[in-house]
Image (cartoon, rainbow, N blue to C red; front, side, top):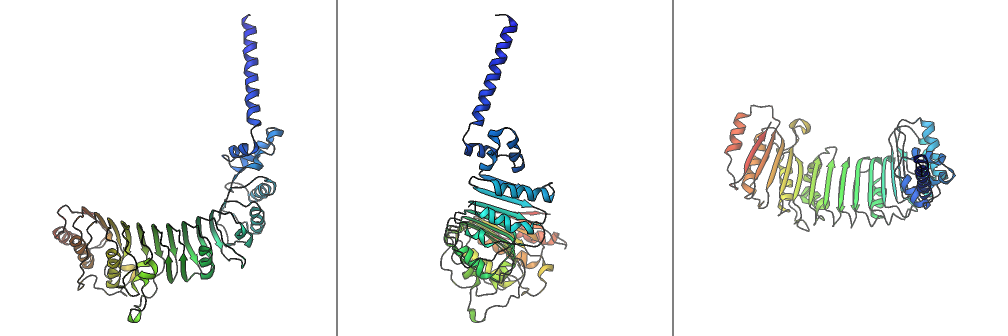
Length: 420
């Protein structure tokens, strides 16, 4: 066979192999082709319909739909969302829509079409304009496992039966009522992860979730009650400082109602004005369970306020295995002088922090009350290896540094490190 014939033969074999390869891809089951197309953004996936008649409807079996307006004109994005929700004929496992334009006129229609698809995961991040009221049809999706809503109004329909399979719930930039949020959480018995961030209209948070192991709460509220016996990680932050008036005759313990059920907590973060909230009630109440698993605490505290110091110490006392403590000293200018300006002076506190290895005090201003607390901390922790102090004070630091470095320590290995 001459060289020209051999070349022709090779070319024919290559073209045949290409056809076979193409046929194999085109003849894949619809669900596999849909899964492949899910790796693309929706706009690109829809374009594959022009490849051939075999691919014309392949995108309609995509199990994952992710829509973002990005650089698309508003009208084009509306058309795209309408087409995807109307023509999609398979099962939508995950639905994600985000945008920075206003879609209030279309939102209700989209949610009705989406609810008919019974997705297991829904993410809605439409952050332009006023908040979107979540229509009742979304609360009828029985198989929902993951729900993330932003810039929304939560108003539960009377017929709401709960999300029995929901494990992850994230609500950001939202408004609702005490009752609706309480019911939404309590009607989700499988809930393990909960995020409530930047909300309005809620005065008293009542979180009852037996399987919850992760909690993030940051917002403006007056009271919070936690009933989450399996909680392992908690971040609690209060945006505003309400008048901190001690409860008469020690009738109420805010530490107990907020943290009393957290018997298996491992990591606790108290931020903003939350410690001030805890300190307004009875402090010396014995908690129902000791937090033997609690090994890491991060806390924002006014070290010149006696009640806050006492509250923090009650938490430390309830965590016998605490290993890492990070504190942020509240700047004096933020809270003003409405606290007792005596710090830890005059308090005969004797804590045992036998397992504390690492500690830090951030935003250290050099005040006497801060130095006094550091002195106590060094005397309570016989296993301490390192105490870091992040200096933010405006006063002359040489005398304060001399005091800090001269403080006696229960641990012979403890290093005091000051950074500027």
